[in-house]
Image 1: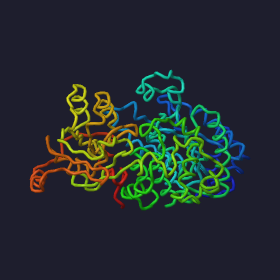
Image 2: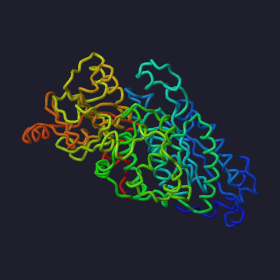
Image 3: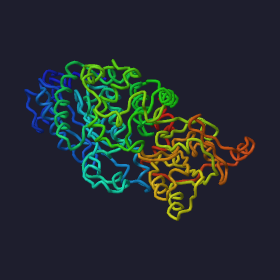
Image 4: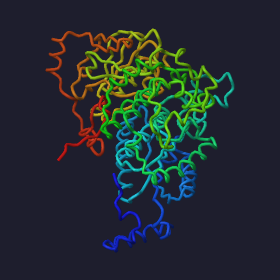
Length: 542
């Protein structure tokens, strides 16, 4: 997308003199001089700062450092904010239905603000689950020179806790600003931003409270002005090679299952071919090498000390498209060549991985004809192949109620349906259920299958993103209490052991549940695609 000429050197365009004068007056009222407006690029600082969640709490101060860098580079920084929800606030509550739909609201809002105000370039500040993907989608859609300053992880509670602190307290405590300190969706997406070349090297694991976050912010502000002058755009960086590198990172780092829907949506925005099969193909080839919770005993602070994402990528060099271009104007290889790993247990070597295959697996079968996703690196060995009778629930609330009453037992397969993008609507994250199972001591003896999604912190055989989803009449809608479900992660199978004639009879009698929707969720349910397509909001072409 090329910026219109009247958005720069406004006073030279006398054919639209009144519009130019009004626009000039409005910008001058915000403290921008006429001389600056004539000579310098306008850089939008897209900030998701708010006081509602730690992942964004520090970004107001980080934005000041970005603005200093933009000024040093010769640009005009103009900051605006986006909404930024947190999955953690809404887990187990109806409000969770709004969290994934927020991804599209945020992307649309950034598009609207940027094009309405004729900006030359953008710096994106973000740190949490849906906001980083939303900003990536906006960057791809706008195709203006841009750079990302990701907020970084928070310190782990272990950094301050006595050695005898219970592990569960260490995992769930939040000592300050930043994204949750394990490999949840927030840090997974920050990893992918860096792996795809849109942030400075080592941005992903430079912690929110570290002074280097401000130095990187200042350098990013300077660099975005250069990107404008050099006319380097997201379309130059977000290539098929960049997506390959993202898939390798997902596999090796044990990233969240949510990376599938976000990368699929980003690829759709760019018209790049990507499918769930690509995730599985790469995961078969790339070992899981990063020992970060919930797929290991380390936190992101340990990864930072060991050399960060550059150290991991250097070990993956033979599997990457390592000459892919980045926002530095250099390749990933050039950016990372000086980094050496200082701890080969935090970041394992290719010949000594935590798991021989990558952290995600894509399952197919009679219960998931077009796919399902599981974080295989978080599944205990004894549950990789498993079968059991179904316990069927038509909402998350129903399953939570039974869990609270300790109504589950080892060997069962819990089915939670009508929680997909259309059926929920909104594809809720079911972390509350998985954590209740953990507290009941069942996380490694009960499986969970759903058309909803899971937190990157979920443990055990939690299989989500089942498609076609139940609300679309997929096989998940036809499961009955006591049906045997077979899970075979090594062979990538998810099957319902029910004869075809019985399934056909059930299908003929099935009707979608009645519901009454209003507001944004009504629009979302009408337009959203299924999880195997990235939960993309689409409308018919005129």
